[in-house]
Image (cartoon, rainbow, N blue to C red; front, side, top):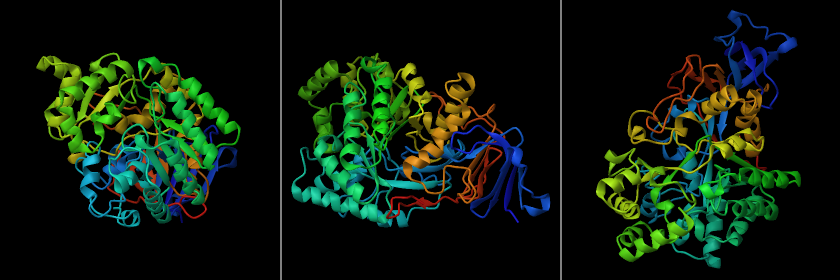
Amino acid sequence: MYDLVIRGGILYDGAGNPGVEGDLAIAGSRIAAIEAGTQGRVTVSAGAARKIIDAAGLAVAPGFIDIKTHSDFTLPINPKAESKVRQGVTTEIVGHCGYSVAPALPGKVALLRDYLSPSAPWLAFRETSFADYLKNFPATAVNAGMLVGHNTLRLMVMGMAPGPPSAVELRQMIALLEDALDAGALGLSSGLFTPPGSYAAATEMIALGHVLKRHNAGYFTHLRDEANNVIEAVGEAIEIAEQCHVHVEIVHFKCSGMDNWGKAATALKLIGEAKARGLDVDCDSYPYDAGSNPLKNLLPPWVQAGGVEAMLARLAEHGAREKIRADIARDGLNNWGRIPSWDCVQISISPHLPQHAGRTIAALAAERGADPVDTLCDYLIDDRGATRVLVTSISEHDLRTIVASPLALVGSDGNCVAPYGAVGRGLPHPRFYGTFPKILSRYVREQNVLPLALAIHKMTGATARALKLKDRGLLREGFCADVVIFDPDDFDDRATYADPHQFPSGARTSVIVNGTIVVENAAHTGALPGMVLRRDGAGAVG
């Protein structure tokens, strides 16, 4: 007897093939049978299945894999993962941009908490090894694969000290990396755009890359520069793939800043050429013209030297502000480039000044009769450096180029949140709620930028291949039963910058994780069947 039969849907296998009408049966946590097209139907009567879902007129696809998220900051608080699982996401990869909440060594917990305060202001940090972190991760609605962050490793070994590590310090970082990989971490993430990651030279990252190779693990990088030097930064990432023979994922790929609009095609060509000569390089993106980051990261990297307290003291100095102003006038915002105006920087989450969520730096400066740079510095001081902002800096033309490309996977760069509780505070980026349905509605159905089968492939099978997921990402007998059912004509993103806490439309949307229904007809069941995914010695993830 089957536990669940999905009957009469249009099955998209995740490999990029066109959808075909058919049935899918689930037994336990696995796909037990698939019959589609001219092959007939699963021969199961109403009495031979504990539950039948009528999927007539609906798309049935592998659960979406969000390859780029920071939900490690919120899953312990919101294990129902509502903003993600209602998009059809069944697996999240967390610990990106060099930021991971483990390891947290004795005496270093407060340092890590302060460093991550703009991203995880309500998360309880504690001393932990990476192995214990994975072991004690709570039950959640979605599967989670964990990365260990390079910035976190540097913090644990060197604090916020600039410059290269000593031989002893590099060995300490390698030991922490190996501990995480032995525990099952999928790989190493980097955030080379901001301290302390930006202090690392390419030689440091290549040394760590050789460790990843020994463990058959991957490298996931927030490029050193997504703005004025984005092409060179893509080249640096490709060089790590060349030197270390590891999979390299360029995360939330973009060409930020007005001076860099139109460069996406050039960067994608570099990635395509690297793949053509046998390198294992991928990228992913989200379909929005604004990004999100801690406000402090928009400033020149030297501002953060020495940690949060040193930064706050520095921001109060007239001379430091003049240097910040001159650096921005010359280069634009760190990692974001030149933006049209300060109206493009909007307060998203402000733990100590929540009343200003939704206000722009331009509006606050006008209200105070102050220069925008002085306003920004004063605001960071008042909010203890913990402010998070939205930055509108990406061109729609580049977005369409990336979305259309078979080379680019889909990642939200968002946390799982909900319209209630601690994770419902502030105005987070709408990508937290809308990334996957926005691709499927705006760029597939409305604009015909790419066909539905390719869009699904970029969210499932292609992503599973990049991550080496051994039994997810495809509708295939014996694979894990991670499945999304949705109406392609009624699966629209509704989250906006002004009102982001909105789930997608789609009254008939259902999501199954490891054979358990988590969302049924757009209602969360409360089930928490997700698993922590670990990499094995051969590099496969399961």
